[in-house]
Length: 222
Ligand code: OGA
Ligand code: MN
Image 1 (tube, rainbow, N blue to C red):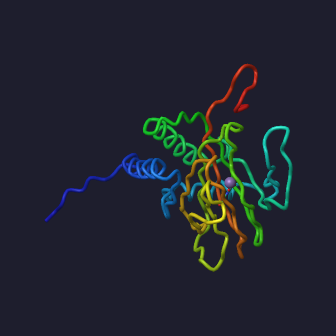
Image 2: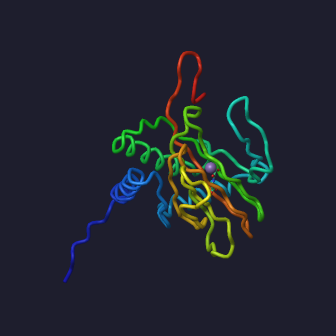
Image 3: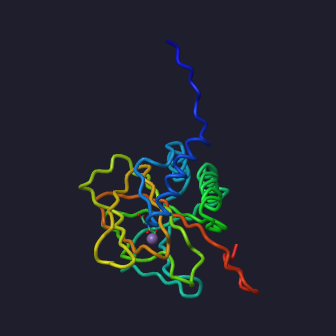
């Protein structure tokens, strides 16, 4: 028998994924989804990387504004901000924009803008336990991380370890940086760290921000 075939549009696929994300965020404030980022987006992100020069990556600052410092005891990765004009960045930026709008409709999060960077960890590099935002001090509200590493084996390390706000000793979960895994969490509520790996580790970390502009203090600045 010939069963009719209704091809799913990518909008349908995203809606299922976005709803899964919304439910978990509502329930527990974070979500870990293996093989979740649509593969074409991961591929395009790898394309963006392929167009960059290694020397474009630089040491990341810690802190905000005038308080930014370099601290190799806290983090060792090198980063590169993703810009709209980068070749092949569009599908990633379109997808994160769709997610932003979905979460605003579904959870009334008031997400205003998005920023993201590639991070490259050399073998042995780490990022010590930190929060992406401090209550009342930052416009970052929702963190998103995905990974571009094919064939990552458990014994290669490099886990993202997520802790609960209330017990920052006991890990809630450990996430291998496997290709397409998606991690999303409330920026102010989950301390997390990146463990050293035995191979090069590529992630993309992004933040949805609210607009905390008041008076003449533009925040976000652009
Ligand atoms: C970060 C971060 C996590 C990761 O860049 O703030 O926590 O797994 N990254 O790369
Ligand atoms: Mn972080």
